Length: 363
Image (cartoon, rainbow, N blue to C red; front, top):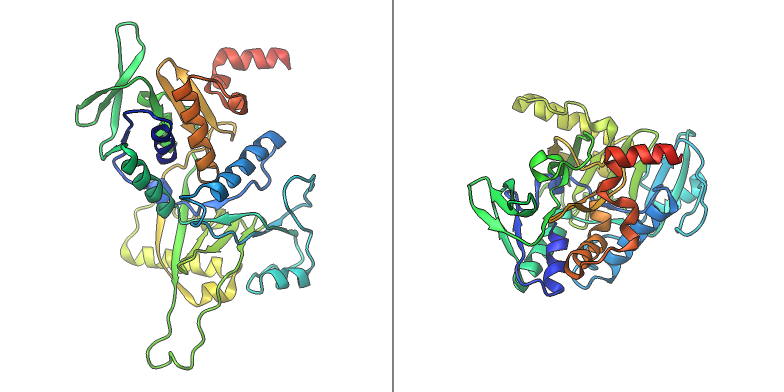
């Protein structure tokens, strides 16, 4: 949403108002923001993600924010490296140790690959950077939620009514609300339930009595993604360790006492330590971020385009990877009133009952 707002202002839209009750958002805070085009078939969708990566590298505002560390990925099966995306593997134990001495891929199950062009970013820093630039160019950010859509006598969407009852007229309403995009009041995008929990740790610093003799905790140089253990670990520029994955989703939705919360943080550390023993073992998980549901379209692909006249939907699972690109594409379609072929496969209409029936007949 922040990327779209900036791109609209850059294209000369005179008035852009963003309604968001949680600046930088809860979903953003819980994201580990892996920038990648890894194992994202078909080729057209992988290419869209690769363009997203190029967007990060070429954007003057954003290009310095990511850590382009590359990723070590362990998969349960061999990958078909068809070309077009920098990859190396399967890797020997010696090569893994050369690329990342702190990774624990020592057992023999699965296959490990290295994807050199990938990275990760602090998502809050990226969102706030986009917002500051958009606001500086004239966009308005309002800490209020959209409660319903405004329609004229013909039924066309002509604006929004906020939760506080404020009405705002608009030529186009763009819904880039993540998982909230599935709300009936926001166009009812076809999403599936996709909860998530991410843990954060700061490396322990040596105490004053041992600082002179104790080495700094070892740091991770690469992103580690273990699809066999359903686990990932990465380390941000400021030293913060980020861990998550299916094996760390225990207790989702539960209301925990302070003692239970501490036990869960300890459990997360023990599991994450399997993948990165030394960096995690020398760190303490301080908090976690839980998201009731991250944005996940029903078929896994982005939803980009007009739901109806005056209402444009922009929601995707790979929002961080493709944010710089999609911001520009959406702004171009809305401001210039064009339809870009690059987004043709991702239109909301593919979920319509009629569209589904036609696809079945054609198949």
